[in-house]
Length: 441
Image 1 (cartoon, helix red, strand yellow):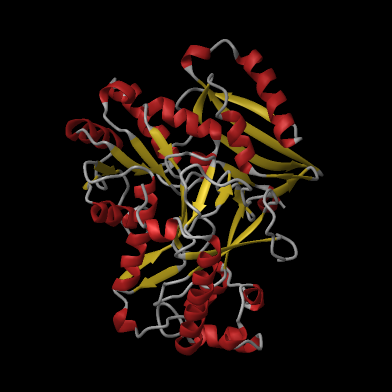
Image 2: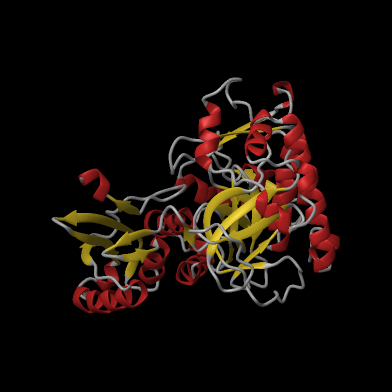
């Protein structure tokens, strides 16, 4: 049931002691070996010996993605002066997807890459992956980290791994059918897209004609959004599990087979803090949303200490039925601080729109939201696709959809119906929410 039963069921007091010791160790390591971190902490008047308790960690400066981009512009090329090991010890290069700006480069030693695989092993084992599984990974293997570590973790568990990187969607589906793959990893967008392709272009029903039992998602919040998770599970006849991580951090969160409606934080390898979005003050009470500030406690080449992930999360008050003492983030990643925008004076989270749209069976999987400004007034346009079986029911769908959107977001929308299959399709991270107001200005 547990990849590492010792730490996954460790008493909270001992787990906190472990986290403090590991934080102190990585702080000393970075302070001694990384010019960037030594400069950052020196400017803050901080030395590693000042951190004696978990509460003291609040004194450690937060690192943001913009800082990492700036470091890359300095010598030594290409990582700047953040590295804590000689450049010759770097064996792995990855970079962020670049969906929120200039990509950030990430250096790892072979030990760091082993840590990546170990973190992912917690994820997959908790979701039921075992040596008997044949795992298909339908993503293009390149410099974006994506499911690279998931591949190695599956091998570490003993699974047979089938990489589908150079195949197109139809060929991937046929290969999964041919080899009777029992599991796969993909973004929620692509999971739904593959099911659509199987039905419309190959005449296959993934529930009956394929053999997938479990699917691990990443890259988007969809697998923690009930309506989207339900669509995926119904389309594939398989269990769908969420995971959370980032190139700069690692695979820090996972859903287990108990499907508790949230993500476990791997508190043996990561220190997770939730802080107020405006003030940065710690939030320890369950049910209060804030930003995730997270530390990878073991990464040595390019340490990630108190990184502002911009992910919006909240602690869950209830323990999980699986027996793990790793705490839960209720609802998983609820959105991103840099995605939340004010429209007509109301704070809007794109995930709330997805939750509503995906709850309507008359609508296809794809949609698009555009925020524009007409004069001094904000206007939100929602483009959706009506499935062929629902053509002619536009007005009833329009009325119900507009009502649910207003209830969920407190906003009115301009609704457009588009032909089924006409909106953009995505394989990795989807870009469905577009705020054009600044460009128009």
